Image 1: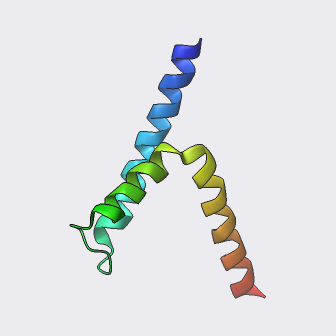
Image 2 (image 1 turned 120 degrees about the horizontal axis):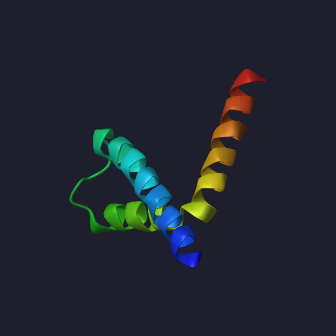
Length: 68
């Protein structure tokens, strides 16, 4: 049972990484050879359980402030 939960965790981490990698790669303001940028991308995707809700909250607050 634990192995299944760990598998799901890493599958979702891989999905999050691939989505964020696409955004990272198309962003022209970020240096592609900067080690710090790659570390943030990898650590953020690995810790998606913590990072993803905060990223979503930031997007909701931004959308709310634009509409009001």
